[in-house]
Image (cartoon, rainbow, N blue to C red; front, side, top):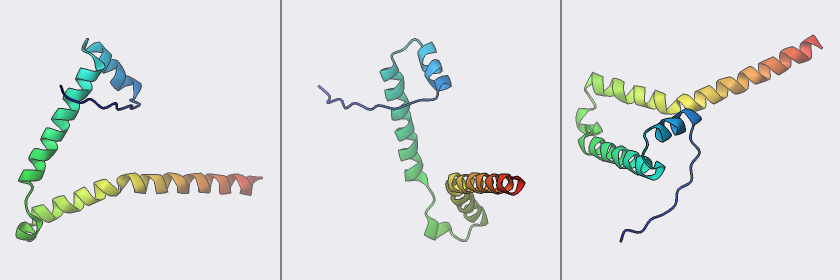
Length: 96
């Protein structure tokens, strides 16, 4: 028998509703989704171009730069939101 571990997550309500609408158990849907996720990621890791051998390819460089930008996007958004909040507070203080 396979050992099972518990995983508690909070999902957006729209996603949760879609899981319920399938009529399948939540556990089965989540297990299938995680199996697919890890299967795809393992496949992608095995077939990623090697950076050293293809570094001169402009498309590879462009994709690497875009991937870097995407990975930094949450930080950039957080900084922008923080800056907007500070600016709003400063504007309020000036008006007072």
